[in-house]
Amino acid sequence: MPKTKFQSVVFTLLMAFVMVYAMICYNIAMEFGGMSNQIFLMAFAEMVIMWPVAFVLEFFVVEKLSHMLAFRFVTPGVDKPIMVILAISSMIVCLMCPMMSLIATLLFKNPGVEIVAVWLETAVKNFPMALCWQIFFAGPLVRFVFGLMFKEEAQKAH
Image (tube, rainbow, N blue to C red; front, side, top):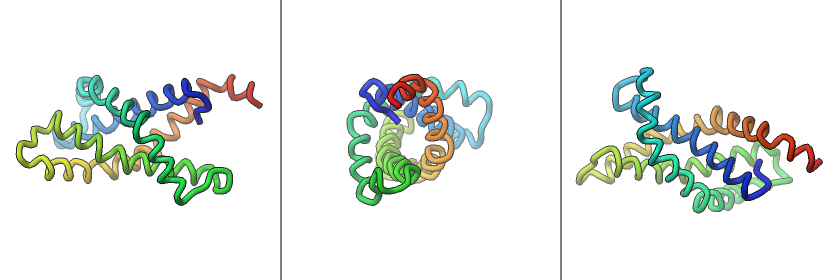
């Protein structure tokens, strides 16, 4: 896990990329009625907007709030590290999913007067995917890659 501000920026950039890319692919696939190879390329058009937005929201708003919420039911140093990670990750998804779904609704769904209904539908469809993707794939993958990137620094600290 990040130990410095620079590491926090790198970790958040990586996590935002992996989460946003997967969620954009998922939403495009839902719109087209299924997955295809073309969707992997189509997703990059939305990435230029959604990745920076996700980074800013996560880094400046959600990170501290998600920790506060998670630490209401887990305690670092007391509870198992995996429980702390799962609590924080779950809280991040609980906060980011509705926010990012609202932004995607406004930018890409043309909701018209049905904005609230389309936003809620989008959030409800996105939440199970976002939670499962975060817990089972993105989180472990990004923590692994981050660990490799900063392995030398971690060894120096011990």
